[in-house]
Each structure stands twice: as C-alpha cells, then as structure tokens.
Image (cartoon, rainbow, N blue to C red; front, side, top):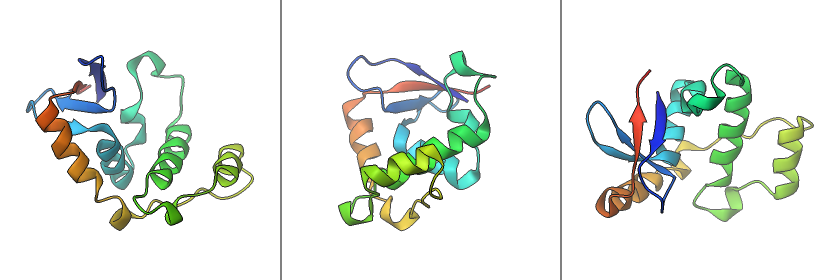
Length: 119
C-alpha cells in the first residue's frame, strides 16, 4: 500500500483507493505499527531501498513523539539517541494515541486527502 498526494495543503492524510474512505496518515502509521506492517508506509520511489527495520525505527520514534500528553514524549536528546541506536527505541502507548482518531474526523470534514494505493 502506498500514498499519492491529492492535496497541496495537507500531506498527512490519505484516502483508501478501494473504499474511498479518507484517513489521517499518523493514525494509519499507528495502525500499521500495531500490525507490524511498516514497509507499506514507504513511498513507492523508495521501494527496495529501505528495510522494514529502518521504517519501524522511524515510525516508532514518530509515534512516541506525537503522544497527546507532552510529558510522555521523548526529549530531542533521546530522539537523536534512538536514531543513532545508542538507546533502545521507545514504545508508543496506544492509549495515548487515540486522539488521532479525532484528527482523522477533522481531515474527513476538510477533505484534505492523499490517495492510499494498494500494491
């Protein structure tokens, strides 16, 4: 599955090509994280040039950094350390990411979407 941009204003949203239901990209990333399907988030232009492990690292760090409660977010020093591999990756807390579902509803109302393309 991949995304194609259909909006110049908001590149963080997608639309399912099979069902034409808009979705918010950070929520999609969280859903893919829960399923261990990281490489499906990669842009087609990078296909074959990135590993599932590399994408997992970036998604996990990003999801830790978008927790609604700022106290749950890693410091930038820790983010850099996770990227460098000097400390273990953080584990996104699902219960702290449920707010993404409300952002998705706003995305749908504003119709600022990308197309989600299945392989």
